[in-house]
Structures are given as structure tokens and as C-alpha cells.
Length: 554
Image 1 (spheres, rainbow, N blue to C red):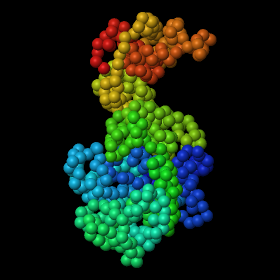
Image 2: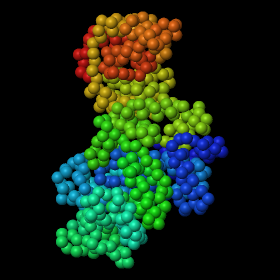
Image 3: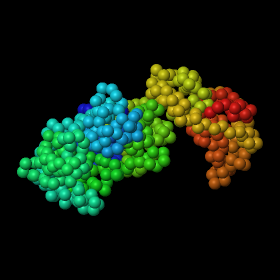
Image 4: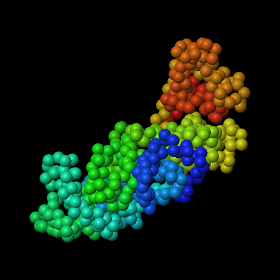
């Protein structure tokens, strides 16, 4: 996956013209930013921002926000012919208090004394060089973003508040305190309204982030006065002595930094208007927004950093290339999608299918092709003679535990294809073995063939025996279809065969995979048998008919 660190790869007139009309969502969002400055002067740099709450380890949704924002940024650069400077700021809310202990930490009880402390003041439960929980999680985020080569700047709320970079906006919040309260109070319940303040003092006694009502807000001196354990305390709002509640913090940050574009998940959608109004009340201009749907785990629950449910970044990359993850982020961002291990194989194969289609497309089609956005306009030329789904089934049938076995089949099937000539395919063989061992193998359930199925499989073996040993996938698939058409159980009268008779039910191929592979489904049978080899496929059928596969542990 390549991200823009210099000028876009191609700014031909054809590309720029197609970009102006493209319906791809990154271009639709980029056009909002172009319109934002229509008839006016451009800023020194258009600022794209993403936010990160380091209350837990970064998850895939965190990466997705940066990847998607980068796609919009690149689309904007093409629309403006790269004449307008841009920046991407990844902002970590690491001064937030730790309101609950994440489930994902190794020793939850060790963190109990640090509840409500700023995340950068909570000891690092993972040990190592990073002194706090917040710094550790920030480092994990940066490590991953750096691995992908994202062009970004990292910002820490702790640093911004304590260094004085937010002092001016904090003074303005004190000056316009009543206006901020007028925006916030109608959004709160009666009990919360009674004690609410946009300012959260950081206790000079305990270091905790305090949720306490204000006794006085002194705009002239930029101080707040509150009670802590019965003792009246006055603090300046500057210098890192306070932070803002999360809704005012959004709007104040936008106003302070001049943010032009920020996307966020649907859970922030209802508050978007509040953020905007606070930004405007503080003299800023609300940025352009893009609200995306949330990722769900396999049970349909929202993925949460603190719960640690769903997939982690590292887990996805254990079983699939980075580009497949970027594709999953690009596709249907406004549609809720489950994000768990079962989605990986399809994402891998779809990525390479889009990549194969790209050279044959015109500019309009290319700009709608995810790989253009994933690779910032410069997709690589990669030939992949074997799909990931086929590799998984090859591992299953051959019981391969190292890629050398797989390459024996691949090289015999595709002349001249070697690990050296096709390094991308070589990489996929490693992923396929890992994925199979961890997710497919434990769920494999072979079943015995009944009388009709046994006869069908024997007929299939006999038919394969008369085919040339180097028959291609299409010839094998057609031979299998011919077998199925002669068996009443597998005739589908709603379909028509090329000769006008009934078509073949999908139940025929489902049976093949259930009996031979121990799985509910698989790739196109002809392609699998061509790769595995006709003799090996016939031997597999023979083992199934003798019951030998049933005796083997999955």
C-alpha cells in the first residue's frame, strides 16, 4: 500500500477531467473542500484531521479512519492539481481520564488506583520503554501508521494543553463560557445540567481529571474556581491545568487549529451539530464532515478498544496483505460491516481482482476502482495466477504445512510460475497456511456420502480419468457439470444447460466440498482440480468413498 508523500503519480488532463466527475466517495468528499474555498483565498495548508482515543490499543477502525482520510486527501490533491498544500494531523486525546479499565490489559487490578487519571499519567501495563498507558498506545498507533507509510503529523493532547498551544482557545472558552453553556445544556439530562461545565480541572492534589461544577469562571483572569473535597480551589485554564469535556473539545480544537476536514463514526453523528456550533461560537469555521458506519464483531456488537473485541490490526496482517485491509476500508464506508476473520479471504481475492481489472479500464472506471485510491493513483502491476480461495482449498486437500508443498502444485499447474517470478503469490502461500491452520482446520467436518452421492463421485472420478492430465479448469468444470446433469438429484429445472436440458444445482458442488474437503463451500471446482491435479483429485475421491477421510482429525 502506497500513500502520497509527494505529488500525485499522474495529473494528466484526462485524469483531472475524470476526477471532476467521479462518483467515488473520496472525490465527493474532496469536492466539498474545494467548494469550501470557492471564491476565496486558500489557507497556507488545507488541514485534514483524524482523532484517536488511546483508551485501548489501536484497532482496525482507527487505521480505517486514517486510510480513508488519506484517500480523500489524495482525491483533493488531484482535483486541485496539487497546487494547494495539505496536512494530515492525527490527534490523540491522551489527556482524557481513564474512566474504566480496558479488558485488554494484562493486569486490570494494577490499574485500579489510577482511575480518572489522564491516560498519559497511568503506568504502562505492558511494560517496556513507554512510560504510560497513553504513550504506549500512541506508540502502537504510530508504529502501525509508519508501517504503511502514511504521510501524517502526530499530535498529543497532553503536549498541546501543557505546552500552551491551546491557551488562546481556552481563554476564549472562558470568555464565551455562557455561549458554550447555551449550546451544551439543552443536550443534557436534568441531573447533568445541574453540575455541567465544559472545563475539567486536573486536580493539583491527586492528578485526576475532575468532573465538578464551577463556582466561578473568571474570563478576565482566565481562571476557574471549584470545590474539591470541600476545599475551594482556583486554577488558570491555561498551561495544562484543565482540559475540555469531549464535545467542547471537538469544537475548540477545530477552531484552534483551523481544521478543514474530519470524518468520524456514526456514534458521533448526533453530536456533529453541537461540535459545529461550539467551533463557530469560538470564532472558527466548522470543518467538512464525513460520517461512516461502525464496524461490528461477529456477534453484531460495536467494536470497542476497551473491550478488545473484533479484529486487531496485527491479527488481520497475520493472515492477509495490507492492501486487502485497505480495500475493506474503502468499500461501502456508510454501511455497517462485520469485521472478523471470516471476511479476510474474500477481501484478499477482491483486491487482486480489482488490481487485474485496472489496466483495462478508462479513467472514469479507474477512479471508481478501489486500487486507485489504495495506492494513491499508482497501483502496481501484479499477476496472480492462483486465487487466495484456491490456495486455502489446496492447503486443505494436500495437508500442506509449508509453502514448498504448495509450490509443487502451483508450478506443475502454471508453467514458469515460481516464487521468484511471482513474489506476491509466494507471500499469499504463507498467509494461506496460517489462515487454514488457525481458522479452517478446526472447523472442518467431513461427512460420508450417501448412495446417490457415492455414485456421483465415482462417476466424476471415472470422467476425470479420461481427461488429459493437463486439462484446464474449464474442461474439468464442464466434465463435472456433465456428470451432474445425468443425476436427477442435481438437476435444476429452473436453469437451462447449453443443450436446453436442466441446469445443475449448486447442491452438487456443495456435496463435493463437504465430502472431499470437509467444508461447506469452496472455489470453482474445475479450477481447484486443475491446480490440485486430476490424479490427486481422483485419489481424494477414492479416499472419501473408502471412508478414510472420516477417520482423519480435522
